[in-house]
Length: 480
Image (cartoon, rainbow, N blue to C red; front, side, top):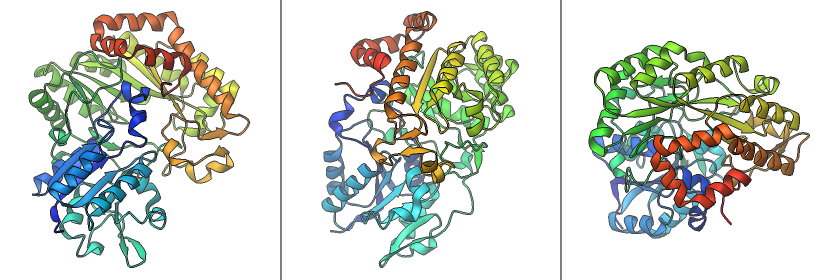
């Protein structure tokens, strides 16, 4: 069978059974477009390659679609972008592809692969190549010359005989303003197949956008394997043109900036907001910020430019525990900035974790007291997971009990239990944390106001009321 070396199918694995996807409350509440592989697809297409995408998270029952595409198009490559929890599903899809089209080359990328690198190859013979780090230029070079001279391609691991070799990290980082916009049109059903978290947007259609790569900070729990210690961002003009494109091409009316630090460069944000005010797109946006990089003047400007909600990484409301895991751990400053954001007329969202190393019932109760004292409209409480590539991963077993079951490492399961606690205890406190939040009168009133501030959210809530209420009171991810 002759395979086309200028074609690739890019796949975003689901990570669990297709049957379970319909019961997954986290998926019902939020389906984010796979912007990483959409960016790679756009880059390859711009350089004369053919790249198509199958997103198994948006369309869980995709095995038949993958097989049919491979048999019809006969690409020489299949690329799989994997998180830790979806990696084994990626291996399963690679096996499916090899069976359907003998001779196809499998290329793995994503944070899990970039973190563990060569350690994966002896265990998983269905991996032909791995892309380490950001993938656009590496994938292009791999398709161009990787089958003939893989050693010449920077940023990959490849097999040679019975061995596997890493060609080293790419020496020259990509200039983000030179990249084409992600190939949103390659995502089946975009934008309507995708949705932001419920009550996190005012209008539809809505979508996500990434305007930076990396993070300037080094928190213990964050995976730094893909972008390592770099931090780069698009210019304000590129960002404005990106949103203008999404509005004109797809009718997008609200954007969530999926950046770790949207406001780190103040000048960029001020210039972007100036453009949004002077040349309105009739779009609103959410973003994540750090307390150190906002003030009332900036927040007021962003509100005028269309900012609707800001998220802040609180992680824990216990000061001693926070200081063990994060730089600039100042809970008083954080509280002041949350109140400031709220007083400026924006929704506030807290990003929290439970079960960090050093956690105790006392620290959790201090955290609850702190969070519930703040005007936080919404929050996301993740179950701490020590991902490969995070600073804390290497010595995590010294800090508690760690069950390294990759398929369950999705921040929705307690795979790590800190010393002095039990999994059952963590589960009970997790349920209490969520239930207490949703039962607070001022929080309930905020959700009532969403009837006119986010009417589509209430429509989605009504369709899945049983699932959402069950999660709010019991924090069970999957419906019975």
